[in-house]
Length: 359
Image 1 (cartoon, helix red, strand yellow):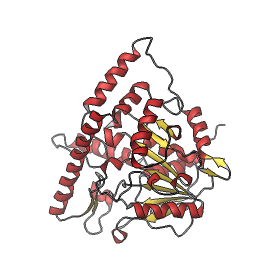
Image 2 (cartoon, rainbow, N blue to C red):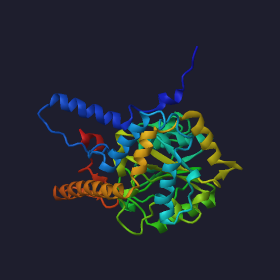
Image 3 (tube, rainbow, N blue to C red):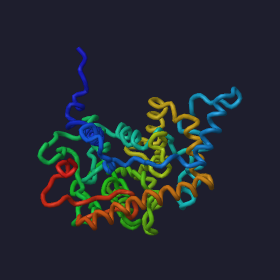
Image 4 (cartoon, one colour):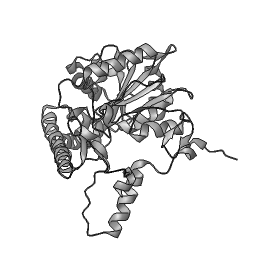
């Protein structure tokens, strides 16, 4: 008889955002006259920028002619997009990243969940607390997290790095030495970030301890302060200890279009094994590439028109964050975030729990 992967049975309840969606749907059905302002998930609301729409239309027309039709995409992604990423997101910032170290995907969430396949079953992961749930849940599915404590909401084999008011929501080096460190900066959900000097300390720590940093930079377009790095590869030594995951969802509104990429430097290796080679093998085996029309849309993000239009969209979302931040402060809440990220993090009144407050 077939035996299922018992690790899935260890997952507590539904995925966080699925639970939120069910609660909102139930409330809407019971209160149809109420207008709901959705603050529970970081989706976008603005339409795709004109430069992106134009690129999509051109690409769709190409797909309708035999001479310009495209089938399966190259394993790493089309060269036109990888070159645009390398030039604009890395070389323009002084980062030594080449196009053949960039792997185009259907989104940062997929890569965040899949990257753990490169680690051994007994690898210890370290995460910030609070944390984007995909990092932990995907490792639970792989059997890497131990047992779950319902009272604390924590896993026995996960190393947690508390991010609290007391430490300004900035993670401190863990007391136990991890194999893999997940960092999301600017942070989801606290909105916090760290200076380039602080990030350099994490790179030095990882290299010293033989650890790997998974760096989620999905919100780098929202950075407003000059001393905050837009990429971990701005730090010396990052090529030997860091994988960077980025998304087109929040900077370009691709949440419903799906496009992202992961950077794995060629010299990144552990135990003499190249992670670049492993990820290339995994990518080629389990993924047939993001659609041609979507990759052309991604290329338009880096056009002169695209950059100007998306700068306006980012400003729109940051103004929303400002309205929420100031409104909650005026209502008497203790609030954080909204400076280098569109996220707002608030302290619930008294000893009220987060789900109680949500309800």
